[in-house]
Length: 257
Image (cartoon, rainbow, N blue to C red; front, side):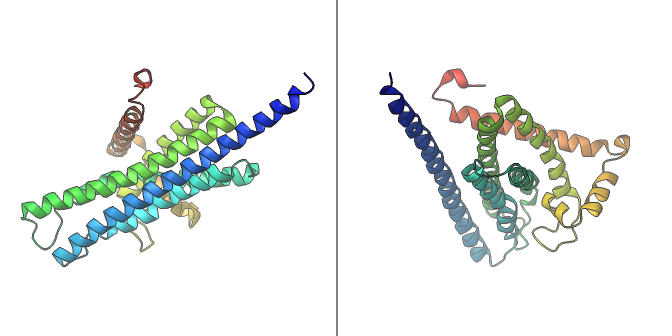
């Protein structure tokens, strides 16, 4: 028994190191997939604009980079270093992620811009092509957002347990509905992206952001369409999450929602 204990300890350490290594490899793989898909989508967008001789849809690229990539980068850093972070640094990083996350699924609403080509808005072929481009980039943004969400979910399970992790992700999804409304309806003072508000702008002028958002939400009875919009976005986002999960779990029929 005395001689077996060190062997057991060494085995446990080896398993722990293997788990950490697998997590690191998995995170790098996710980032690599996101980068490759981004390059492909941007190439298609550039070809479209060169062919049409206009740059009307380049805002899609800025929305993708400003909204989505900080989300996955922050999630990746949390995943890599959360065991070494103090409590303050960990929750500061998580707060950053929460503020950036809504900008990823927000791009679903960019489908509203289809058929807005100034060259020939009656050309059905161009309308179809533009719709496919917008949809592809929007779904890439959703993929990146959900990828970061699953990474954070895994971190919270390891750190606080599954019940807390689910509650936190649920809270994040609710906040993302508010972020979606801000990005679609509230104008920003910053001349970036599509000139609508990004949720992370609260760091720049928190008093003004909170005040403007509050006036657009209260009293409730005067802003019913706003709440219906947020509820609809939350429902769409939840359904997409279920679809992503079930496609991922299709090999194991017992995991299907």
